[in-house]
Every structure is written in structure tokens, then in C-alpha cells.
Image (cartoon, rainbow, N blue to C red):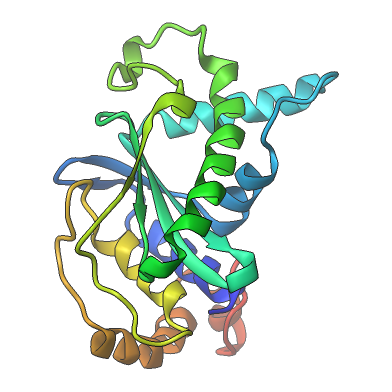
Length: 215
């Protein structure tokens, strides 16, 4: 599944439901670019600029307004997408994966992401947590990584991105609020282009009715 299409659909979902409260807490849908950044940034560099520190603080403070952070991620060598959920209440990283044979590869990618994300939280670790008390700590590196079982699984090689989008849409922190099958995913594949073209966030659509230019 193309990176840009996954990113565009997430942008569309965020715009349609800006304050996404679900049964087990408020969630934040992160974009693909930021999730990839965390995979690469595994340690805090020395001599970091004040401007970057401020940006990292802003990102972290935005996250802690929520109970869960949804991070769409990929194992690039296998071109496979999966979803990581940082759950503050449970103090764990949940992994929603549509192809179990890749679980071992996914685990290392998640560990890299956790190390990178922790660098951002380190910038607010000394703050008073009165306004976001559900975050007991930011020691993500010692939180459990939970490979969620009994999820809908793909039976082809090209649907992982679509499965991630459905996981993001329906996961409430403990279970999927709506189940789906490969057949439904195949139908969703056919509908997705129309969803994105007709999205109110599609700037090009508003001007010329031509598709897919999300800001």
C-alpha cells in the first residue's frame, strides 16, 4: 500500500474526528512521517538546538493530552504495515499486526520507535503532571510490548496498509469495536480513492475536482 495513500487517509480521519474519544480513552492518530521519525531517532543527540528542543516539547505535550497514541508503522524490507498503540493507562505498547509470521521483525522496529519516542517525552519528564495524571511515567523503554492476538488477518500480500487503517478506525484500546474480513478490506480498497477524492480536506478537489493533494 502506498505511503502517501495511508498518510492521506489518516489525515482525512483526523480532520473528520478532531477529538476522538473512544470507550477506553481519548486517542491521537499520528501520521506516517512522524512514526517513521521515531524509528530513526533512537538516542538524544548532543548539542541539540533550542528550537528543536521546543519542538520536541510541543509534540510531547500534545501527545499527553490523550490516553493513547496510534502510530502507523512499517517493516520496510517486507513492505508491511502494522499499528503501534502507546497506551498511557495500561503502560504498554500494543502492536496490531495483520500478518503473524512477521512478528519477530516487527518487534525490533517497535523497540526502535520506543527509544525514539522516549527522547521526546524526556523533554517533559520533569514537568508537573497534574493536567495529564493518566501518564504515570514516561519510561516507555520498560513498558510491556503486547502483540495483540485474535485480530483480522490478511490473506494476500498487499493489504497490510488497509488493515492498519481499519485498526486505527475501530480499535478502542482493548478490542476492535467493529470486526472486518479480507472481503471487507477488498471492498474498502475500491472505495478508498473516492473517499479521499471527496474528502473536504482534499484541497485540489475543492478547486478543480482532481484527486489527492492533501496538505
